[in-house]
Image 1 (spheres, one colour):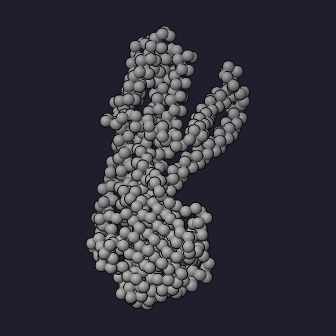
Image 2 (cartoon, helix red, strand yellow):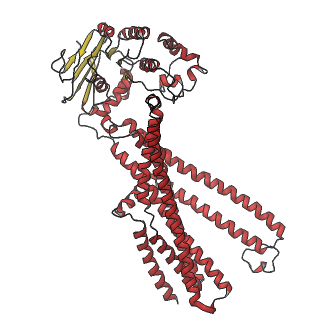
Image 3 (tube, helix red, strand yellow):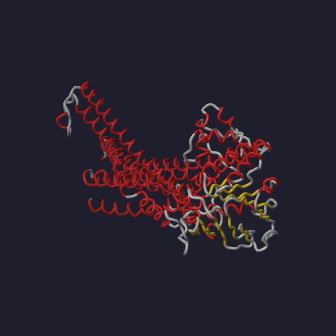
Length: 598
């Protein structure tokens, strides 16, 4: 009998391995990719995280088992003549047993709650770490890297796929735990209840067959989920970010139709998952009962009612035990594409290796240059076919204006000077009195961001207070801010309830274009950097507001390096030097493609 059991176990394990290979591995997809992703995910989480997660899962399972065993011991042992024959039985009256049972279950519930809270804190901590790392990569990525990313894809990663990543890791731990529990359960029955070994093995065989017959293709559905998350986030982001444009074009129906198509795909995906899970459960229950029933029929009258009941219970328990392994594996694979998407975006945002000859500043020099007046700033970029200007020298006490038709490259030139475009090919020389410092490459561009006050043509407001929108983490006195707002004709913003610290809700764009533009200029001026670059500073403004901005710009040129792009004739007339660009590489003012302010 023992040799037959060992032989049957060997056959079952081989069948189980084949079933997992066929039922769960997507066609055409190497299993090595799944294994590599799980390995990388485990390494990223760290062994401490995995051990703690496994320990909490084990404690939760033990509490469940202990609760069931406790109930059986107390209820069957209390007031029963057979109490002395039950292991760990407690001879109590039924009311006393019930009272003790309620108290112990309450204690167990409190312990389970504590375990659940600790487990969720562990998972959420890992989730927050992944999100923080991704945002850091986005903030430090070069312009060429960011050009390959979409807003919807990034939002999907932050709001959906990273959650799926942590869920995949959680289910991988559950898979190991469920597999160990199944092995322990199988070994216990084989060693203790050998007469029940065959129906248990047959039930496992039936469950594995059900997994083979009802393939889940969890990986394929998980990849569809990743693409759907990105599409939905893109649509929702477009709807809210461009709400005014949608209404102005009466395009609500178009956007709603787009949203409906994507949500319909989501409903199909959910229905498909439920269908396959229900199909698997139906196959499992049918095959387990059929195989166990066939075995009982073959046994004939040799089976008593007690043996029949025990057989069915063991068979169902065996099927459920293996089902836990199957379901955990499917959930793990179904959510693992979220980590695959995260790895792909990270690859796109991977830090660029330090370029040979790339220059940066020490922290001490960076702090010093942020406060001291500069003598000159020289910038140059590697020449390209589309470059209108490849070098530029700025000096203080002079207003330099760049003008030209729309689309000639004015904004691109300002972005390059500020280290926001073509930073891999840019270099800067900073001159302060008789000393000079050199910056180049992406690392140098990051430091240039800290030394330049740049006001883009299209300012962006955030759903934060007015103070936070202007300072973005910086510090400035309330009096200074209010004085600036009054001078720029924006003092009415202080009349809102809460004033500077009132939260700004932006779904409906409550500010005019001119107000947003002036707030963007003020944000750059409040930084008080030695270099100020302003893109179309008088755009979107009425006559009075434009005149006040021109006056401020004239004042800011005293002791600073100021560069503007503009179509404003009055501002051009006010400039000490004008650089005119056109759609060709060379400009009338500087045929060589360079400009110098001497």
